[in-house]
Amino acid sequence: MEAGNRFAGSLPGRFVRTMSITIGGVPKAELYEMAKTARMVSPYAKRIMKHEQFTTLPEPETVLLIALTPEDLGFTERPTIAEVLNNERLAKWSDVKFPGWQVTLNPAEVGPHLAIQYTGQMEGEFLWVGMERIPGSGGRPYIFYLERNDEGGRSLDAHWTYPYALWRLDYLVALRLRKKV
Image (cartoon, rainbow, N blue to C red; front, top):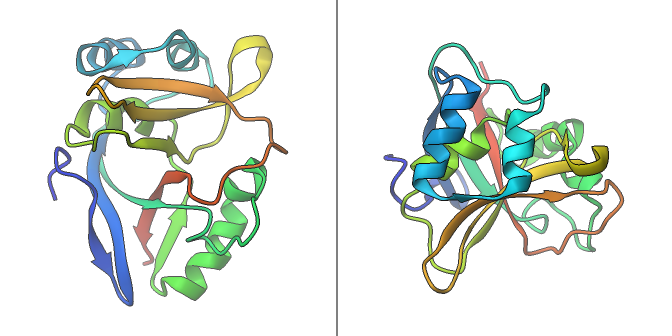
């Protein structure tokens, strides 16, 4: 599936939204410049991209993303961010819901690459990037999100994600989906 298209697709048992993108092969500074030409990049997103914990792969690689909500992930009450962004829990959930597949957190570089390649983002859509948090302003943990507002403006931003803050059940999160080998 081309990255410019909206998330679409299916896996056994139900409809889910998936999308392939290419990551890697672009140095940090160049990736930032590319993201700026595709979307408005907030000062918070810029700060994360300049942080030493933000890295890029030396070679290009195609990754499959899946858009899920905390409710999709089995939560019935508002979970904490730490609960949603927990690779162990995601692995257990994957074993039950998607045998043969594993849902994991993304490398942080998925945020800016997705900002560049996701040209078909729906108006009004707010998409979190499920990733390991990176220190931002004041050393607080941040993750990326992509937004297309009601006026059609597109941005790559980052938000402080205090581990025990509660997330809404309908928040849309882009996670990585891998076929188990």
